[in-house]
Length: 111
Length: 113
Image (cartoon, rainbow over all chains, first blue to last red; front, side, top):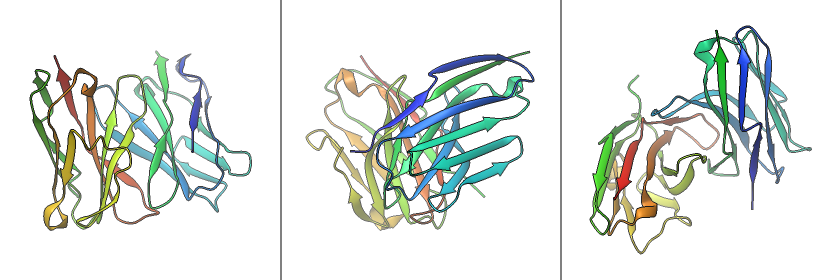
């Protein structure tokens, strides 16, 4: 059974810092991995999708890496801003687009 | 492009009552999902449709939950009778294909008292 863990559970940083969020999964047989952002009371917004054959994806200040063999992914946020404050969730696609989610990292960026 | 639409946004019911949620996916998306997100946890898949057929409902409590996707477009999720532990956000999502980005709706926050 696939299990996804995210560390840390919460993170508080001052504006401008670079930061790394971690995601680990127990079964390396995945189709892809997605990072999502969730604002309070809102749905999930997809940030990056990495196919199993890829090593990383970049979008603006965000960079996500995938090491399938070790069951790890990281989300790197450069020059963090208060508007980045949200909960970040990673989800692995175990097949037929069935997503298994981690419990998320709650990020607070203070001005 | 319009996103995934869900209604209602909020619902408060008493235990043992019934409730229904509605979802309209992004146009053209064959795959539709219902997820349950309990406070402080990641979303958990309840049911996945491919067009109007069920792909996975292994985690759907079938004694009280039911879902349908008539005509392969919009979908309804029903709970009858509701329990206190059903209090959660119910998220609908859709995707174009099995390796594509999944788009989520705003969710319906259900409180069972």
